[in-house]
Image 1 (cartoon, rainbow, N blue to C red):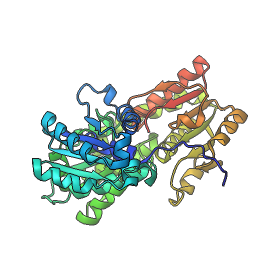
Image 2 (cartoon, one colour):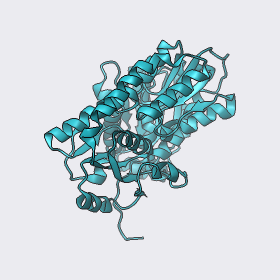
Image 3 (cartoon, rainbow, N blue to C red):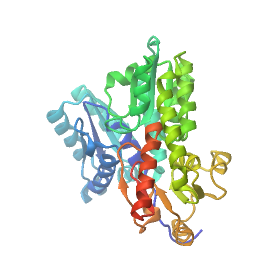
Image 4 (cartoon, helix red, strand yellow):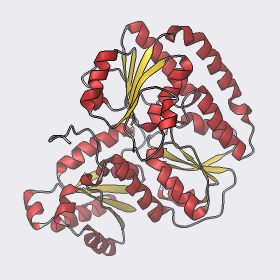
Amino acid sequence: MKHYSEGYKSCSLFGSLRYFTGVRDTVCLIHGPQGCTFFNRNAVYHLNGYNRSNHFIPRIFTTSFSEDDVIFGGRTTLLQAIDEIVADFHPRCIFLFNCCVTEVIGEDVEGIAREQEKKYNTRIIVLHSAGFKGDHKAGFIMACDTMFREFCSKPISSVPDSVNILGEFNADKQTSQELRGYLEKAGIRVLSCIPSVCTVEELEVSTGAQLNIVYCGNAARRLAQHFEDVYGTPYIASWGEYYGLDASKEMYDRILKFFGKSTEIYKEDYRRLADLIQAKKPIFQGKRAMIVSGMKRALGYGKIFQELGIQVTYIYSEFECSMDLTEEFRKLSDDVDCNIAPSYLRERIDAEKPDFLLSTLPELVAPYPFIKILEKDYEGFSGMERMICVLEDILVKGKNSLYITLL
């Protein structure tokens, strides 16, 4: 262990905050210094797509801890903040987030929350989301447990031909657009899209779904497991199943066959993409790629490259090493690393000079140039078609780096 750290990971406050900002008619209140809220709010606005949405902007506020609050406690500050929020917005619920400072000084946020709940008859849900408790994945776990306990605890009658989509963050649900389109054509109803923009009522009826579709394993696998453990609701997918021609086809087949629906609804799109891949393969012959990404997209982008005939020379993924996905990664590349020092990544890029560098973790590959995109990501048949267009454009323009903005 060295005597310094190259900090590059997010914190549990960020992960838990991302989960609750999309619940309508609620307010997120961070009890701590203004800096915690400034950086986390900016990241959530950008990564959840609120800055691109014409429909919804979340309310994220802070108690703006002062030095006196740190020394003497922030009880008065928190009481005043809740008073103002209730008076101005009359929210159905307030999500109250601890940060590192309030956790360290032992602020009794639970007691203050219960006191204000009685005063205003307004639901206040506390999340002990101090950043030192882990990275954003730890925040996701905390949020999954809280979401299920607070909003999904009452069973309702099963709704025929219905699903929940879990792990879709985008405010306009852009990343699951193709999937939802096929579900609609098949007559399958989406009850809840969690944690995208949704209502409390949508969360409460989620227990009636017959199937859960996990869109991001880090964000929602635990939530899906809660549904299965308590209600017996099965779930499909976990990591990178919505990327590439064959993987997307297999996933759509599994969902449609679960409900006894025809798979003909996507066959034309499948055949068109298969023809496009064959036509474009010569362009990518002999090209090499490196991927620096979390599990979902490292596996997903690797599948796309493989089907295009692009050699994946190296994959770096920021995942929990306790999860044995070694075999899945080895199918895509002979050289895979997990959670190594970021400085080593730059040495690899310098040495290999790949034709394509894909990263959802730009802080690890800086200062290499990048092309900043994109709203929809690259899932499904339409996503792979977008990827082909982007890669071809990069070759034409002579650029070699691609930065994917969605985490």
